[in-house]
Amino acid sequence: MANPKKADLSLLKLDYNNLTSEALGENGLSEADLADLKDPLTLAIKELKTKRDQGLLPYLDLPNDESLVNSLKKLSQKGRKKYTDVLVLGIGGSALGTSALFTALKPLNYNALPDKKRLWPRLWVADNIDPEGFSALLDRLDPPTTLVNVISKSGSTAETMSQFMIAFDWLAKSLGKTALVDHLLVTTDPETGVLRKIVNDLNLKSLTVPPGVGGRFSVLSAVGLAPLALIGVDIEGLLAGAKSAVAAGFNSWSTNKAALFAGLNWSLASKKGRGILVFTPYADSLAKVADWFCQLWNESLGKAHKLDGSANTVSQTATKALGVTDQHSQLQTWMEGPADKTVLFLETLNFKSQKNIPKLFKNQEALAYLGGQSLGQLLSSELKGTSRALTENGRPNFTLTLPQVAAKEVGYLVQTLETATVLSGVLYGVDPLDQPGVELGKKFTYGLMGRPGFTEFLDRYNQGLSVKKKFIVS
Ligand code: PA5
Image (cartoon, rainbow, N blue to C red; front, side):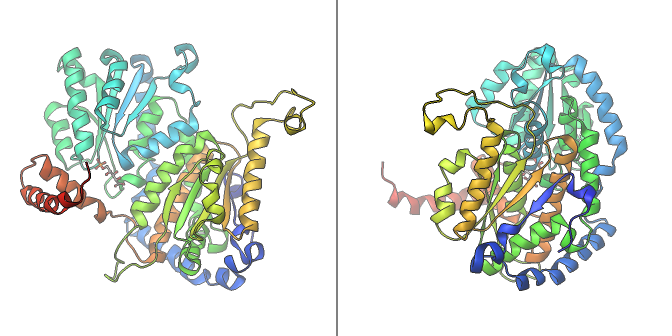
């Protein structure tokens, strides 16, 4: 296969040697399996283009929104003087991308840094409704110096709206209803939904989630860019990287990293029974990219039905891990457990800081070899060692490498994985942009919480209870 383009390679490298039969024998993809990818991937890339031209994939246009960038730059300069803290209220696609990029692009101890070293507001992303957690978070914030950014595309997500109502009250009690307007930023649909109605009724400041951009594809819209800009992340760099990835997503299949990512995993799932994709970053800064990716992959591809209505019998579930932590927790089953996994390593070649291991205990052979080397060298050797061990055991694994964890590289990575997900939708024949499976649970919750129009679900819930009562041990 041809080499990826040079400009492309400099932001992200895909090494899939250890997925092939050359490395894995019969457990790997043969030359014929790889050649079999040509037609479906070529068709999928063509469909990507057609759908884009039809305006059905607006996530691909997010990196071109210069006017949003300009307004966010102004907002962030104002916010920098006014706020010590930015509190994001959101869940799923309205939170995970922001958390991932925050962790990737700011120092890992960012919120704990003293003001002089931090220079921008702290960022808190509240994506759970645990009463203890949310109380503890509000208790540490000060309304006069906090900006609350509530993010909900639908404007009706119970978790986010409950947080919003609590935070609204919290701001109003401290600042009064007039002044709170300067401490609330709403990101929601431009036209529809109750949150947009509240924005209009109360004249609140707002940003929009572009129509047609689903939550899990929205991190490079105002959803992620606003909070990230407010803490001084280089959003232009992010979008520049993403823009390159959008272009590369239309390359021919064999030089197209998004397409290969999709095709190789599809082939492993359908031909080799590898229905689990373990996403394993080897850097704390990339740890939350795994959370974001798991939502993207699972909510997009975990579908019962194909677009033609037939049953979807092949799929792949992403799970997250963290190297080396999970070498001491999950590696045993990756090596010897059910042969249903592909392991994806995500690595960086450069860390923002390094720690050298001092030359101590020179008489202790089992320790002395470590002295004089760095933690980065050890981490890299651990990844190489684990990859080799998996390969020798016939376990498929591949590696994505970022030269560094910086805005451009991370923008490129995120956009590539989004396109890989959409292309996978074409390969599996499912709609990657919907999530019908999450609706029923929401309806039962509405019924239990007394939302008008959902009593049917309360009744259905109670019917279920009578069965379950038989099998409870207290
Ligand atoms: O990816 C998705 O569409 C979901 O994860 C949503 O982002 C999540 O359910 C939150 O929805 P909303 O932004 O409407 O509150």
